[in-house]
Amino acid sequence: MAILFLPMKLLPLLFLLFNSVMSTTLSSTATESFLQCFTSHIQYHFNSSDDISKIVITKNNSNYSSVLQSSIHNLRFWNTSTPKPEAIIAPFHYSHVQAAVICSKKEGILIKTRSGGHDYEGVSYVSGTPFIIIDLFNLRSIDVDIEKESAWVEAGATVGELSYAIAQKSKLYGFPAGICHTVGVGGHISGGGHGTLFRKFGLAADNVLDAMIVDVNGNVLNRKSMGEELFWAIRGGGGSSFGVIVAWKLRLVPVPTSVTVYRESKTIEEGATELLSKWQAIADTIPEEYFLRLVLLANQDGTNGEKVITVLFDCLFLETVEKLLPWMQENFLELSLDQTKFTEMSWIDSVLYFSGIPRNESELLLQRRTEDSNRFFKAKSDYVTDPISEAGLEHLWKILLEEERSVLILTPFGGKMSEISDSETPFPHRKGTLFEIQYMIFWNDDKETEKHIGWMRRLYEYMTPHVSKSPRAAYLNYRDLDLGRNIDDGSTGYEEASIWGLKYFKGNFMRLVNVKTVVDPDNFFWDEQSIPVLPWSEKLKCQQLGGFAATVEIQ
Ligand SMILES: Cc1cc2nc3c(=O)[nH]c(=O)nc-3n(C[C@H](O)[C@H](O)[C@H](O)COP(=O)(O)OP(=O)(O)OC[C@H]3O[C@@H](n4cnc5c(N)ncnc54)[C@H](O)[C@@H]3O)c2cc1C
Ligand SMILES: *[C@@H]1O[C@H](CO)[C@@H](O)[C@H](O)[C@H]1NC(C)=O
Ligand SMILES: *[C@@H]1O[C@H](CO)[C@@H](O)[C@H](O)[C@H]1NC(C)=O
Ligand SMILES: *[C@@H]1O[C@H](CO)[C@@H](O)[C@H](O)[C@H]1NC(C)=O
Ligand SMILES: *[C@@H]1O[C@H](CO)[C@@H](O)[C@H](O)[C@H]1NC(C)=O
Ligand SMILES: *[C@@H]1O[C@H](CO)[C@@H](O)[C@H](O)[C@H]1NC(C)=O
Image (cartoon, rainbow, N blue to C red; front, top):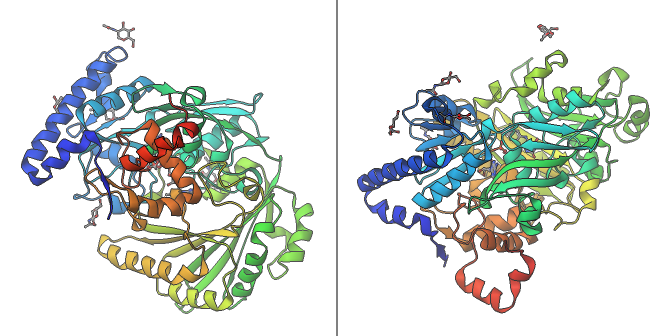
């Protein structure tokens, strides 16, 4: 039986689930009290009503819809029946975040924190319970210090803005973040974060030096004052369970003046299955300067309308063509290795290249939305520890051919990722992982939603014997609520949570639960997949054993 945990702040709301009319009245009263509390807390910083309407965006502000939509990147969570926030708080200052936390706690209102809004299940801006969004898009200054090889980045900045800011200061440094430039650093780094540089330098989360977080009491803490346990938890355990991260201090990494990109595809008829087998066999032992991801597409073939499977080699080498060519000839002679297929460029140009931005339009890195933001999608992830057999692949092709717009991204691990221990950060998918698979399906019509999600679930079922087991692991940043959710009334089924908890964090899950129990015992920072608080009986046991007080520094 699942044990339910009711955070104190949500008890009144839970009670009112039985009376929706009362509930609406009460939640709007709570919202008004919240807004009163909030505006009185921040009066020292903003004193004209004009300013306040930029920080507090209520439902009757004419900009409410556009602000809400501005960081929604999945149309599944943008329709008339999608639950909307009572208000959006858009802080310009850390004190605004502090006030929002203090006042929402006081009034028993659920808050959701949004940075870039890329959450695959809309968890940063949708909930079944009345809620308020703290949206950090105004908090996005970036301070790059080349001499100290570090940068302070506020949580609302995107990885595109970060790369751009670094390149403005120096062409010799970069940061190992994700490939899509519109992703927010708040969610991305707190969930791990990987891209073209991670085989050489590790995850974005592996390169965090310090952080600023607003905790459940409304205090702003840095690494020293939050303690090493909480600092550990927010580097891969997801920020939303622990507080509101307002800034990261990041370690910049050295990049060569010239890197090389290469893109080449083969269809199944052209031998892609054999090539993929070859790639699987060496994926995690490829030199760490080489990033060779595979993108599998089921495309309409131009000539006869038949669908074909294409495997795209999408590569970045921290090396010149001359130096890398012998390695490619030795390992992938079947690919066209004509020198014209390789392009040498600066690291920042490779960031543009992977984002599909023309080299002369680098300012597009600063855009927070692209055309791709306006589509429906569902995704899932897997980790592969033993190569998938060719028979396994042959059947996979059949499933992919059932759909029009599926994309599978195979990201090789190894290199630096194998050198970092599983418990160094909450992200546990390290040594022994050959590669990660991300399954994605896109569509444009809400009537097709069920059909495509059904297909995705069948694909995932099919892959079971071919991927990691006990647990079948998954990547937090590719959030999947099919893996289980905390139920919407604010209670946490501890046993249910441990199902997805073990998939995302493996052996690190219990340590995250311990940290959560110490820093947020009343489960104020709750969402559909937030880390649960230890059941009181377990807590008692743990205390009797001297269990977690020893491992968790208490403020
Ligand atoms: C098009 C696309 C491309 C992607 N490419 C990559 C990639 O190359 N590599 C990769 O690793 N991932 C990638 N991702 C996944 C991405 O890393 C995650 O979706 C990430 O969580 C997004 O962060 P965000 O701030 O944009 O999202 P949000 O939706 O704002 O937040 C995601 C989660 O983090 C929480 N959160 C956000 N900000 C804060 C904060 N300041 N403090 C506390 N909690 C916070 C939210 O509450 C939510 O739970 C991609 C996603 C998309 C949609
Ligand atoms: C309003 O705030 C500014 C600082 O933001 C301050 O300089 C000014 O004196 C304030 N005005 C009033 C009337 O309080
Ligand atoms: C609408 O805005 C006014 C201030 O302009 C505010 O007093 C009122 O509470 C708002 N109503 C709602 C429902 O947000
Ligand atoms: C809405 O946004 C526009 C553009 O950002 C701004 O000029 C305007 O003042 C905003 N309106 C309100 C009511 O905040
Ligand atoms: C509207 O969005 C919600 C999620 O917020 C989803 O559950 C529902 O199916 C969507 N409705 C339609 C018609 O797409
Ligand atoms: C970049 O180049 C393309 C074509 O070469 C051109 O159409 C576009 O205007 C250029 N953009 C800028 C910002 O110069």
